[in-house]
Image (cartoon, rainbow over the protein chains, first blue to last red):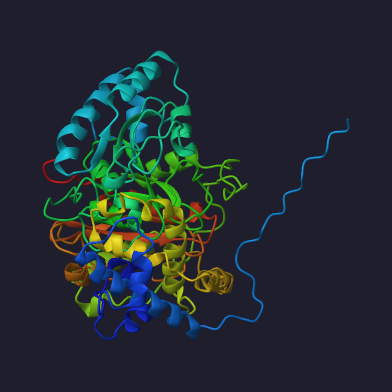
Length: 92
Length: 454
């Protein structure tokens, strides 16, 4: 069970907490951990790797939890891409 | 010279030539070097810059209330000629050759920059779990050196409460102004998203970050916010609407959420909350029970922090100094966040549109009053996973997700340590936050009390 972090509490992430009640991680054997480690310039400590396993599971939990809240079909994200016109070509 | 003087009092003193800006600055520099440093609130003293600015302020006519007034800023705001280390051991050499917009505006108002203040490394975006998640170690509460000052604007909270500056700037993605304000007995103003330019402020989340004042009163926060707010072409998220802090309309109706008070165990907080309501009702405020629509606001905030934080700091996360982060939880958190799925982030950004339904709460009230937390500051020497259970509470609603403003201010004490309440208002209605907080502070003195030994 991932320890409850401050952000979990502050974000009211009850869903994230509940969904991380998973089995113990096995550092080194988890493909997700290896994938993340390959992206880093330096090896992480054993302690960091242990927490990394837990963090990845927590994130997977969040990824699963959000599916429980279905958004309306075709709803738009809260940003709009602003098209920028080109500068007029100068006549020679 | 009163180190706890309000901005108005200090300004009057300067204009009446009771003291000079140089003298005021020297006093605050001394306090930062002693008290502020003892509490680990200081990232860097900007002594030479401050004295040069103070001399110039003394030589030029006053432009407004902030002229000649010394301030300090969270060390995520760039200021030319200073280090801007973001609280991160891995950014120890970092400097920017430009001033952040917020700092530049305070300079233009005649302000004097005393120091860069301690913060949680990278604003805690990697999901920090310990008070010492900072290059400067655990910042200590102004009221109790065994307790944490809160975060991520830790130094802004402690230094301002200790009378080490007239006011400070902090920032908030999700709690980083209100938390240290509550734990240090300060008044902190988290403005509407986009009210203050983020140009020159370290990005954790482009769509959630807000820069705001932390001071010893609602009035002081208002003065500072007026100076730093405004549209900035360098930050496309800034609002074109001008800030208007003059409250318009009738007395706000205050919405009250269903408060659990940690299953009734947060006795001091419940008492402080009920006393605060009694004060407000005596002033003629009506209250009404309200509730946010039940939606996963916190889940969305977490996904946004992960995706945007990992992207904003991707170069560092993948770089050779990443392991230097002080909190191993942050190493794990930021690394794991590299794997945040695009569809999850986009769900959160689509959810944000859906979450606008929470604006329905404003059909019943004009603001919401709620404790910042149910407990006072936790111990500074233990992880939050061991101690946060004794704090509890926290706004689990849509305020940060939807960019709503809030003002946090002290409402009582628990074993001699401050407790904070907050007034949350609809987007762009900072005037409502100010009206309620100001009225409360006219009737009470929690905001005027001083930490022991300060």
